[in-house]
Amino acid sequence: MKKILIKDAAILTMRDDEPFTGDILIEGDRIAGLGPDIPEDGCEVIHADGMAAMPGLINAHQHSPMSLLRGFSDDLKLMDWLERKMLPAEARMTPEDIYWGAKLAMAEMIRSGTTAFADMYIHMNEIAAAVEETGMRASLTRGLVFTEDDGGRRMNEALDLIRRWSGKAEGRITTMLGPHSPYTVPPERWRELIRLAEQEKIPIHTHLAETVEEAAIIRERYNQTPTEYLVHLGLFERLHVLLAHAVHLNRRDIGRLRGMRGGVAHNPVSNLKLGCGIAPVSDMTAQGIAVGIGTDGAGSATTLDMFEEIRAAAWLQKLDLGNPAKLPAMEALRMATVGSAELLGIAHEVGTLEAGKKADIILIDLRKPRLQPVHNLPSLLAYGAVGADVDTTIVDGRVLMRGRRLLTIDEDELLAQVAERAKRIVEGI
Ligand SMILES: [Zn+2]
Image (tube, rainbow, N blue to C red; front, top):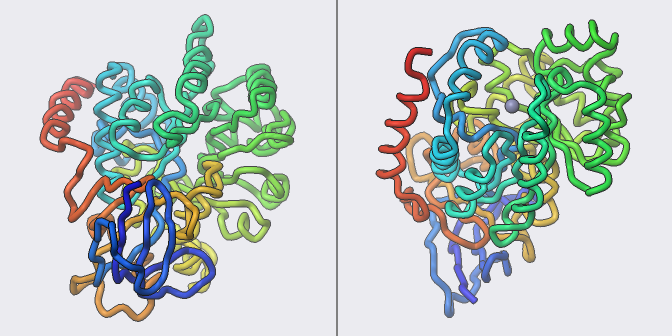
């Protein structure tokens, strides 16, 4: 079995202990031990003096191929942005475009310290293939909108993804069922999907209450809040549910989600940029609701840098509540690791550094003026680090990036493919 020893790192386990300097032993795909002076015999050694080691960041909600639309259409209202720009461009994407767009996102994620992600899109076979090749960990969902009769095509693709890919890529791929949102899926479809998910024990990944417009639509159709609507459909009774956004929730809505399995993916940068509002994450965590962090697609967030999201999440709570003690550094980092792992249903395997867990680890190079001196490691990482500070990314015990060089992706080929495809997709839109 392959053994890797990370030596002399400043280790942040994301458990309750203080950061300490020491070694991490990886055997195969798992962490075998942490501590001072672990013997090197038989190990490939990674010298991490001057670096921080922490669990890989987990992006709890995004649409990876939207990377092809990065920076294409900004500064518009969400519905205009979606209908006039994103949907026409997405309609032109071929399965091959999706593959390369997903791979672009994965290259960026590995480069910025993300080791696992939850994805919702179309042509999921291509995305799954890219996950398998790049070595990342992912929860994949075929997004389902029911705006016209497609003869069951979308539904068949969703089930095909689940049957074909659950547990594949050495167990790195898991799957969910993805009704897109309260406003794009009619109630009879929701009931059908909930029944199916319960029977087959499949988690659900959906969007909830992203905009005031959505809240107004649901109010008009059903005289309920979006949250109330999903509660009444029975979504939270037995299922593990990943809710993206959850911006427009009132106090009673938050009470309604208490005790839910799964939790909420907070997407602060996308919410900020589209002017959607500030999700009440402090109130949700106070009620025991698990909150993770995601970027949403690069079409809105521009980058997939989870360090930006961590920072934005903390800032928003401090600003919104007029209190700098809200969402402290450690808690924001916890959301992006343990919290997101909870949402993806993989918290028993990843999210913290401890013996027996999967070896999903990142090393952050602190040897630079911007990140010195190190008084308080969590503060420095949450408020000072950026994705480009990540030196090494390890998933499932396999090194995917070392010394900022990608080891599973041919970056020259990737960038050439992306340049050509992206141009064709947006031409004339
Ligand atoms: Zn989304």
